[in-house]
Image 1 (cartoon, rainbow, N blue to C red):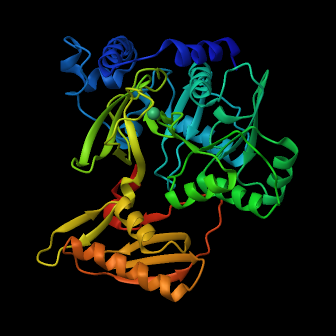
Image 2 (image 1 turned 90 degrees about the horizontal axis):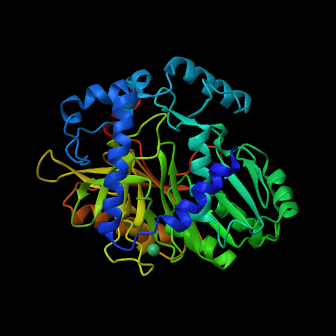
Length: 446
Ligand SMILES: [Zn+2]
């Protein structure tokens, strides 16, 4: 990977792009968007056609342009990307790479990866070497404690689905890749030998590492731990923070882009120096929204006015760090994991956000060690519990909180079934709050 390019973006992100006020930031974004859109209109036939009427008088204001989602992005893949890459070819190569675990093959000099999702519903994402170096530089700038010239051993626990994350030697900083499919015992040995200074992984694995640390199976003392790739639940955050006696950091990264990272105060800020965010509110009063992103750094597969499938909750209070970047209270979950309830009085449905479920569980009892809540159908909820104490007692407390929640929205009370907690961290993403409702999964055939 191009080290100079990495360094350039590291320094730009860390030292040059400093914004004191929201106004300064917005001014910067507008200039970037104008420049970027000139490129996009020139090189992407899809966007040229899609925004046709607006091109001639484009003033840097994206807000009025139509929105796309994964469906449109995949349907128009061949004309949307600017590297002349054919979707079937790319898909074939990416699948092959996943099968063989060799992520090095490229097409026209471009790497590709598959987004997670059910088969047939997986997006393909393209990234050039230059974009990849830019990504590494930006991530390092936002994540590395101290500066680039200190020694760091970074342990990366990630689902491999492209060659972006392969082990890289970069002088003082070394990346050590842990394949989630490997045996636990191999991870334990590697961690003890390596003694990483930074650990990055999904919270389900970070929690497992904390359990190993508590059981004295491993003994590592990282100076920074970063949660990625799954929704970070408070129950896991508190446990990991307690065991390692430090703040747990977060990165909100998807195949669609590097979207947010925590500041020194542990607040998640959207990376508005790379991506412009528009909010589609689901509940404005509570600050719950779906982000529409426009990344002004990605050129191979431009991502403009793209609706993510995530639910975010904005922070009401400004962060003490003073950053003008949008602060989040949390990443709530995927839009697919909204719970639905039936109104008592009519055929109307009511949405229950994952945050409502999470709060009900956390409020019910402090004896809950782990949980998973699944909406199986409109009137059936399964709850898996692992508790520290009297299980029957906790079940009743959880049931009471759930009933209270459904009642407060005047909804028909579903049946709550309690099951043992038997989930193990694996290659599959762990969700503590999940909906299996058909209504939520219309995008299956993308
Ligand atoms: Zn902050």
